[in-house]
Length: 143
Image (cartoon, rainbow, N blue to C red; front, side, top):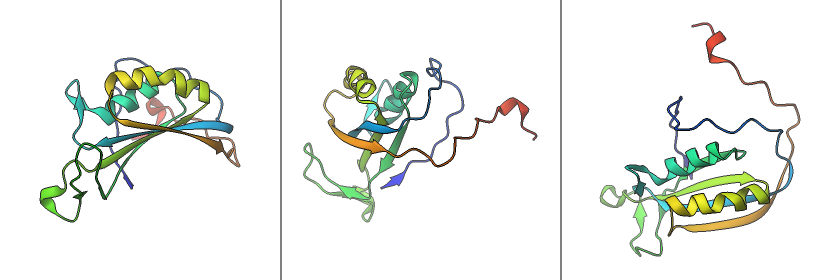
């Protein structure tokens, strides 16, 4: 699956929760299975989920687009190989955080995506070898 690349700078309705220390050890991976084109409040469901996860202070979220697939609502195989079936390609939203934070997020997720397939898997997060660099302050960068 290839990631969707789209940078958002500002414009969120609410600021993200405060940064927290790096996640490591036992965690839970939440995967939301969607079809490209699903919308809520006039924007893509995957966008809404990512913004809600950020506002909830979750460790991170990624959106990945599949090359081919079908789902329980449509037995038609959607693929990038045929232009007429390239709509409704499978999308995955993947979020990893502590089990408590992921389970607390589920009601918000179900508000924006009540019928999507959602899976939870126990995972182990490997700590990074080096401490994460401090985020750059956009106001101090040279143009």
